[in-house]
Length: 210
Figure 1: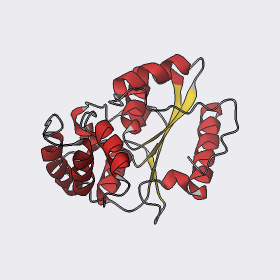
Figure 2 (figure 1 turned 90 degrees about the vertical axis):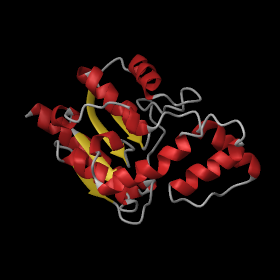
Figure 3 (figure 1 turned 45 degrees about the vertical axis):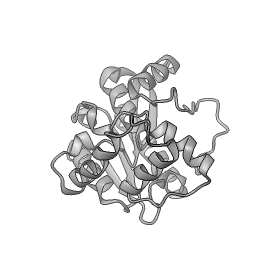
């Protein structure tokens, strides 16, 4: 996160824990870092692990901040979410097709996402190797009621309508939703995101005290 002051001893930044970035494995890694209740911040696919963590270990999660959460399972039936799943399913079905190079798979994946592929052949090859290893995000069963028990802030970039629909679905369960127009899929890189996050943390502490 470019907007956050990272020079803090009480922040842990979690990298991809394995090739598949399996949320279930990420939950284990993060849980082992938590010696006391913490705020959990996640972006995109990482939001799956964050919600799983809050469901399984509610006493350790003080609050969730989810940037553009890629959790379509929580918003099934909404038009943009279903369109996304329809576009991505044929791509995921070819993840084990050895006749398709990793670079070609990355191009297929990005185009289905509505993103123009960029980078060198080597970069696309590396990206494709990782993308074809992940589990489709809509395959994970998530508890939609987590935000009713755990303070949750959703921040979206007001770009892809799918993320807006997911945010709306989570907000219906009690989460706050902030749109930072023009920030695309990485609203966390905007300075305003840091201010919203800090304000959310302060209010979460105040609400618990009162």
